[in-house]
Length: 227
Image (cartoon, rainbow, N blue to C red):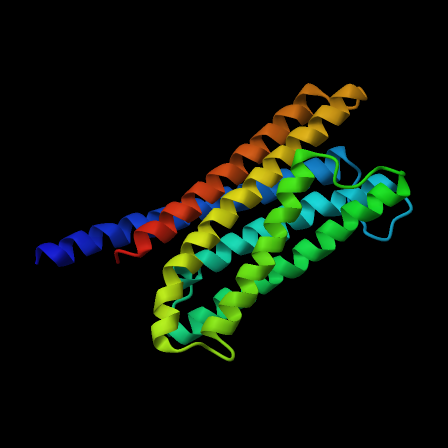
């Protein structure tokens, strides 16, 4: 009886944290869109305006990469279906995040080419690209272990803790990359006198929402282990 009561408490806490994660995730996306569309002129990969090309980068790396990676981690709680279906949704959301990351990274390299800017010269770029490479490796290993061709049950059980811990670490690394990127961009805009106080606050609240999204996702996943 005591065990079931404790499990129920964990379940309620995990569900509440999942709801909080969605709240902060959606808030971050809304704030991001307000910033890019209202203050930065929108985003378009094939635009002749290099700033619009650049704006594809934060949009896809935050909405496409971080948000979908978080959703993938929570899929085992949010998808009310059989475990096998949850596993496929988990892999699919991570694949969406991976594809978004590829296009987002290509966008910033294209922006650098359009403005003759040297690539990979900031801490943000080092953290971001390293995180993305590790994320790709994590997805490939996870796919091969749990979906196709699939490892033996004994091997899969041994890999699960590493897979989960690695995923949680990569989520925080991607958020670290996002926050350093927002800080770097706001600093450049401030130096060029293109940043108003309102826009600065908007960028700060966007970063804070991204951080809280990651924390709530991580806590939700951690508590779900005990349900």
